[in-house]
Image 1: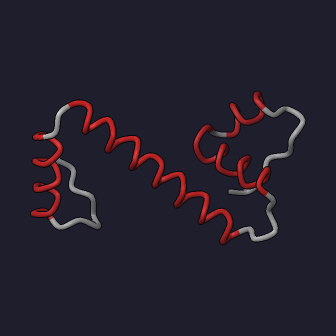
Image 2: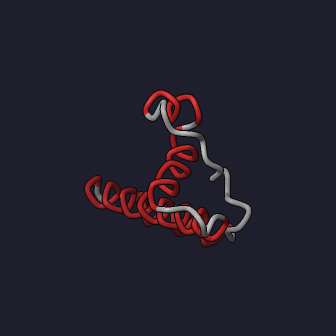
Length: 84
């Protein structure tokens, strides 16, 4: 069991046990909520680091984080890569 460095072992064990007790639909819902939270946090970080970015540049920066440079270049070949 790889315990995240920022998590107490007992808290981690409790979290794993809670996930195990959940049904598939509840685990899927939790996964989607955590994914959305991660995207919001990443977007907030991009906006803090680059207050001059418009929404389009923020979107491209997030895409770079999520998809990587190669895919971003394929999807938006005419756009420059922006720093995340």
